[in-house]
Length: 330
Image (cartoon, rainbow, N blue to C red; front, top):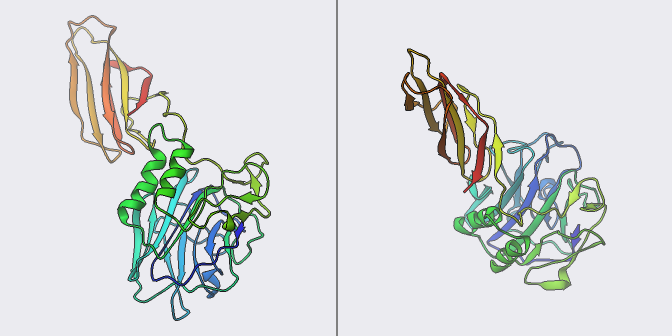
């Protein structure tokens, strides 16, 4: 996709794009570029993935006022979160160039006096790599925006991520939030047909973009314009939890686990449940439930556990069995 927009040189600027991480990259690479691709030591600012012969890390590049190029690499590598939508934001505030992933700063470098240099008759391009705006990127992308003369704050960047994950968030609500930050140019890329990419930024329809050599959501192939927020709250699901094996909450939100436990003490031994919760796969456990040998075998009690996102729970049942757990978003 290209847009005719041309921005003046700016001592500060910000660039964002959502990219869907595949299991492996191949050329051409997904890019969001302002003016000419900085990777070729020309002029501009870009965010891209797999940009070094399909094997490099996610990277942000900026051209300094002297014509040099500064690149900062995501320490998460080529594919920091395979199979997921990931928000990348690059911010230059006049003294530091910072790359954020999913609302958190992952790398920053000092760059005094490194203005972004405007290039005549060079539009934005979305999707192409190595200065190939007519090439189809091999990954879905959405919500590309550029702020000329504005360095987004860390709070604003965090909000760009958290507002997309809010329970009950809608596509329209997310677009409205991005627009509230007054981007110079903003392409939600939610079109499912046609060739026009509508600009929701401050420069309006004069800077609408044109989709070129891309597949939109209803046309198959790599998707440009997929939704990155859900219109419905996450549904309650189920999970099989095995005694002695840690279970991780891999969702992007905290959950409440409800695990039915069937206690079956023997004539001489109690039935117990030990529980450990923590950020690693081997959390310290304590015995939280114990049913004496005199309890009738087959007694069922439900263990309720609050589990933060990405944390682990380790349940060890002795003379007891674990049933299928329900997983309720909170």
